[in-house]
Length: 351
Image (cartoon, rainbow, N blue to C red; front, side):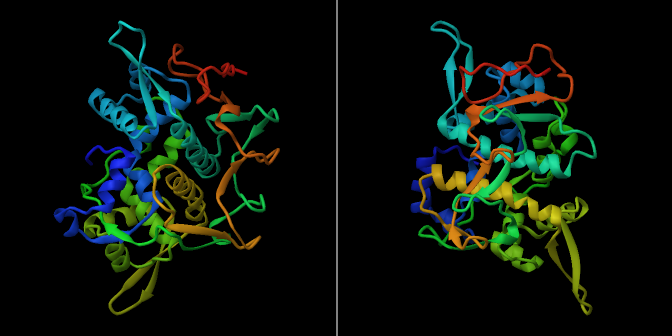
């Protein structure tokens, strides 16, 4: 993926190149645009470490054990997208630290939605690796997605959508069509994490987009291929993995020849909440008009998805979050602080 700032991405979308004109047309989507910036699971995990207090290259690399060239690339992409800023450690030093921008802090809400999914479905009967504390009310917090209009919880089955002012289609991005290789064992080498476990399912952009189409009502192989412009072998790989992970179930709808369609399980439907947080973030920060408008059946009004504390029901602000670990850190020198407020006091992770 060529590196581009959000403004250049918007400009390029407005003036398709001759090469782009030859690519399939796909629906405009703020989830897709968000994923163009985040690029892959490694970008999410780099951000996770910054939220957990890491500021320097060596701190991030020591936890994630990723190749230094890969880490350099992801940091550069996140900086170019204005999610983080690179700052010199001193006037004369050649070393740098990385700090969150306002848009980077807001991506924390996407991480909270992913964390909640991992806590609910992927903990394997054990306590979640990280306990969140909402400093505003002082209670342990389980992030909940609620409607901005009525403040009631939302689910995939209580939301409808319609085209917004930014609806339409654009040439499909020129994406490498390769098989996934990394899984949760790779992503958890440095620390156990509900976010890592969720990324073990949603580890690449194609998987996100297949899930997006399921929430749009697509069920059959040919329809996925037509909507996404995806190679058949790549699509088959992603669908098979999602069935193995119990996100989808394969249901036969025809005998001769035998044909199947794909339906979301209860677990799969819960992945709607991280996806609409990406949609919200893309709508807010990437300079496009909204392609979709969401409507909540419960109250009958248009809404934005809010991440709230399940105890006090107040919207979560990254500056008000603390955490405690339920495991012993692998590196005693790794920073124990939590996230965006660069000057906020750290919460003692040992309790």
